[in-house]
Image 1 (cartoon, rainbow, N blue to C red):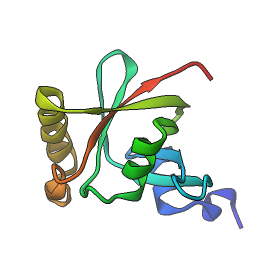
Image 2 (image 1 turned 180 degrees about the vertical axis):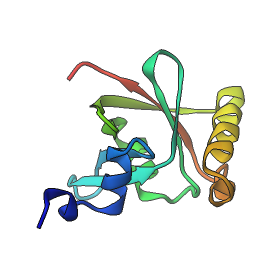
Image 3 (image 1 turned 90 degrees about the horizontal axis):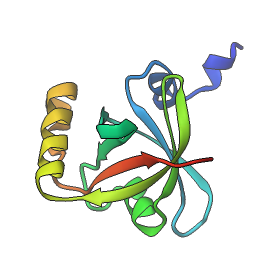
Length: 120
């Protein structure tokens, strides 16, 4: 079996740069949790991601511990998440819906985060 066959569809899409693979620490278990989420590039190398629900586990994990790892294509690194509101939140949601189309309609029901790269 080829190594790419062992990857989830989310990991595969992240390797192609289609989604962001966000790795968080489980807020209860502390275990590494990987979630493939839609993204748009922000300013100064940041990445904007949004949850479709207030109860999305990856978003709750970021609220509990904002440190994460993100992978998009060949880009991979340590990030810190900051929940955003106001104009930046609205702009990110608009860009995500335009980028991903109709399935992104649920965006806006959950938190929006700006992931800023840190030094590993």
